[in-house]
Length: 274
Ligand code: 2AM
Ligand code: CA
Image: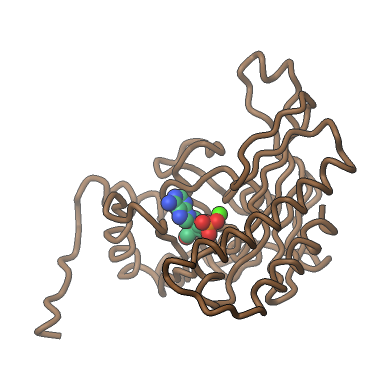
């Protein structure tokens, strides 16, 4: 899995270094070319080595082969960054074990392995269920910070339908309660930053299974926690992702409860008076 991610990452860097002038209308073409090439490569490698495995990828959707394993593939997470030449993007892959008896009984699959590769920094995050998480082969752990006000956290906003996304209110409130909120544009990398102790927490609305599948296992194996916004169990189709080092989780859940209830919302300052 790591070898495939490295190979796909190297391919992305070839496109990235071409530094093609991006017309706004042409943006989709360049991104699509890199996205598609990366996903095609990953699918080819999986099919050659694991011909019975199902693959769900962002670009091509689900390819079912009837096996007990399913891969979740984001061939380029951070597409907008990539298109603008901002070097924050990655390849994200997770493997789920979902035997047919569990499928038929309606039980969810188990995430067993995950890799997120950042080719711009040559950082490879990996985890195996029950065997911990690593960054470039060295064990990583979530941070030990237990105070929200000492925490650096991260979030993300979708690239389209932003008018339907309430996250700016959460961004504002959580900014006032923490050391800061970063918004770098790659959910998979944000999740890995929680796993590596760089961020204490991360949340985002409406992420897709290929954005979260790998990062969630890496966080859990690094000792962190991932839930929905009300604290209930996270599932890949939850569309609500709240991740943390575990220590600030209840405090974050409390903030979410307050914001959803409309309590304690600080007014946005008048820009003409600041
Ligand atoms: P992408 O780069 O593969 O599109 C931004 O914080 C995160 O949200 C990125 O991981 C990005 O993945 C994802 N994203 C972008 N647009 C989205 C959308 N419309 N709906 C859901 N997720 C989106
Ligand atoms: Ca993505």
